[in-house]
Image (cartoon, rainbow, N blue to C red; front, top):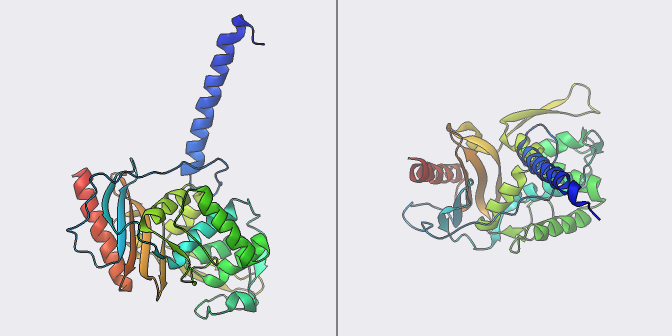
Length: 302
């Protein structure tokens, strides 16, 4: 039982704890020093009232543009249409991996199983890399072999890891998002523009994901090939635009067409989230997302 005289001290200590915890959450969610958030993520909900649905002349299947600061949807086109999301899948895979606090200095070797139907990879069978470098290859260069190797290192198999990814999606309230494997090559890996925007926001809470996906390039090292370093370039060409990309991911398979999702900020520090699903061309997806962002900044910050 608390003594009445000591009650003010107890309340003061409780207030200090709440203040400290709240600020710790903010630092962990928004830092980019590689420390991973160890707290329950913020729950994101968007406000669709007043969202524009026509008039931008975009060539795509579905899209959404969100004011990151308050969750207001500025533009929405078929935002709840379920579609394949290809390698945007890897953002959820990366979160699932990092939730387990793996030793990123541990190593994994690319196997024949990892290489199945992934011939474009520069990671040859037998190459050994750290988990950190594999994550860079998977997120920045969208390497499917790297993602499969990470799934195996994390959970023993792609099947077990995929089950954990779906559990992660459910825990974040993503009811239209489902996965059948961790790379995005399966066209049954689906979501909506609405939920992909939320995935981008959740991914931003992981400093390492934000760091990797916002960098233009990074050099990874093949540990068992002396002197073999591989330059990984970001597939998200928005990193070359006037906007500062905070996190994001591209995706493409024939069933999904060309996709891109990104959280960006302008020179004034104002943040918008944009998602393009189903653009019919590689370069076109970047033109369409820039068109949305340019329009959005004019609407909100003119």
